[in-house]
Image 1: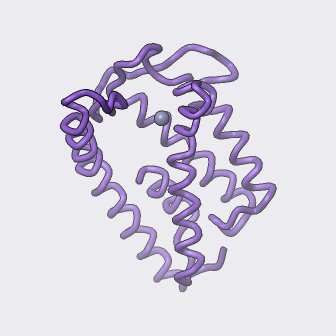
Image 2 (image 1 turned 180 degrees about the horizontal axis):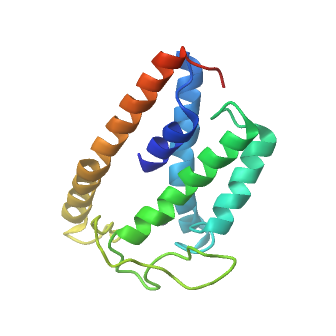
Length: 169
Ligand SMILES: [Zn+2]
């Protein structure tokens, strides 16, 4: 939701439905993608960093992923959408060591965590009794915080689009 909000905020909404759906799908995928690192056992490390965001954004701009109308805006939208993930992770609650995300990789291997706990923890210990309760309450909190942000982002960019008569990506 955060990736979508910043992506829309940067690049605006395409005029037509299909490009809008395509842009939305790509931004959502970018927002989720950093957690694919779970598959390779390097969770919250390199993929949760500025370095990864720069790499992915550069590939996106080079390949002209259909999220914005110019290469510069593609780069910006993808970089910020990707960075929204580690940023929100750092604002959340983390109980798995190492605590936090490797936000400044490759400049630093240090794990960052704000300790603010804006978002609840996500449990992957599915065998425990409290698995569902923990995750449902965390999802509810995320929806409560990010839902309004996404709605406002959509509302503002939609108004901007209607005023400008829309653009193509
Ligand atoms: Zn993550």
